[in-house]
Length: 289
Length: 258
Image (cartoon, each protein chain N blue to C red):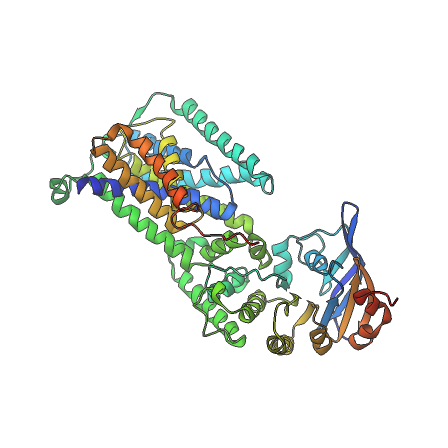
């Protein structure tokens, strides 16, 4: 039971990251492999601001603002000039941006792991939950994660920007001829995706003791796997895939097979893709003859 | 003397050595229902793509309502007043009928609302949403799609999808509507209904319409004037009845008499 809650909590972190991958893929038709490193920047933003002993609220706001801006800048500087270039060029650029961010983080923050300030680690106790063995961090992550996902769904379904995003992801050519500024929509997508990454970074700091320049790599690749499992491009798919992987990871860690956790996690991808090649909630595109 | 809505001046494009369209000189007056016809591969859709900014012309210019739009971006051209439908229907299939129309309202100044207002659900957001929804309902009502507004676009019958495409294009509040083979794949009843819809749009919205069509009954039935393209060039133009009886046009369509 506790493992399950922990898994759901970790899963909602993965889901938040996977949403970033899947939204960018759906709208810009590219894989933003630098997404994991935006999480790292968000986490460092928390660690650094907290080291000046400011209120956690300030740290949270700083992290969100920084990540959102970073997302927009990455898109403008690295990806926008490649609009219309071959997907392979964009993919390599994304990997380049990822290493660039890790390199800069090493230069600026040093390669030594930085401990997370104790305010962040010692959350106020919630006795009724803590007695059951559920940590406050896990509870906060789970609740906030669900709230953010509901808010995102509402944003996409019920706002004009959201509808434009859906339209662009379905048929960019038709959308642009209906007067939609595709570049603006792509920028908004990167901004929203990166803000989600900031949240993921914050919650991830509940799980790990130190921040280091490569901290985004593992959750990043796991969440990417989650997005593919759910069906890349599908928003509910990313949520389902993320939560599934989080639960599987925690259940494995609690079982005698714990040393095979990573292997099991990624084998799941292979198994699911064998059965459903487009992912759990992916669109089935029938090839027309 | 009526006002000119669209004028093209030697408009043309070549892809490598292939001149897909050259020296196209269209003059379409305000309120015209104008046909663009020609055999397959004559360059009709190419002309539409030039007029909507999908392709940039290699020669010539075009003007909408006196304003030059050559070389402008697609979304700008749309906002300046050219909207279109597609030969093979391109609706946003996994969105509802009403969302399809609301997307097209996105960039009209009267529905301006920043993403921040939407994100934090300020009153402005709800106000804009309501205005957009009402306008979309109004349009769907005109096109007889109000009942289906909450179904997914891909679940509509074919004839209604065509209508929805026209409704979506009309939502962008154009001055000139381009219809690319609106009757393609329709049975005679649906075509007759479509002709009524097109006439209705012209009369009620005071719209100028340029349409590509192979169905000569439709062209002869509703277009006052036509231009015939063949191998990317103008073959004939003028009043529909005269042009359709022009021996050169008949030759282009069915070949030389042996």
